[in-house]
Length: 255
Image (cartoon, rainbow, N blue to C red):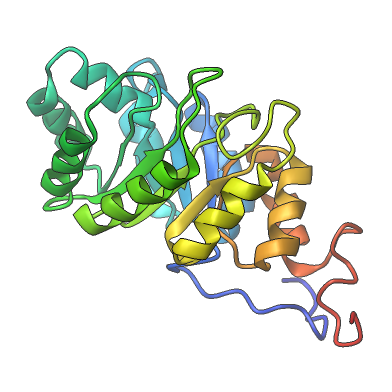
């Protein structure tokens, strides 16, 4: 920070277990990754190489090394896991992870149907060698998952070995924990909050109003994901009360 303003909320130092920011990399080049970490690495904990982009981007190993050297943990999007699983290539998926020295892995079933017991087995098996981030929720439009089922899946996936569970919203922020207009699904989020430790949940929040909503309701150290590269520092200003939306929220006389 270029000037130490008083009364800013405290952020835990990296590497941290909460207050996480996950950036969504949808196919950035090596040069773009270099430019990103130069300005954003201190505020970025995780980078998800979205969907199956890791199979297509040139110089993947070089890009991953840029993130590693900057202290940012990269992992492949859960849709890639699903693409391997639907083809019966779980062992090949693990070899792909090892080929690139991945420490983190995402397990999801947002597009394909995987019996939940099988998903738990994948999490348990992968957690022996990797840090697992599992995703709960569907990418399929109009598919309704009861709130009790959301809670049950999140709990059992953490018990199976997931480090964090992601609450699905897609990169659009219009499904899962959100309504079609991007507003928060209040009852679902409140039910999850009541039954789980919020520090174990990574809430996808690609839209600024969603980020503001979570910071106001869960505090500045809420875990947020699917953040666009250009929105990482703006999100940090929201967390610290350095943007109009939250400027008054963290001051001593704010009440």
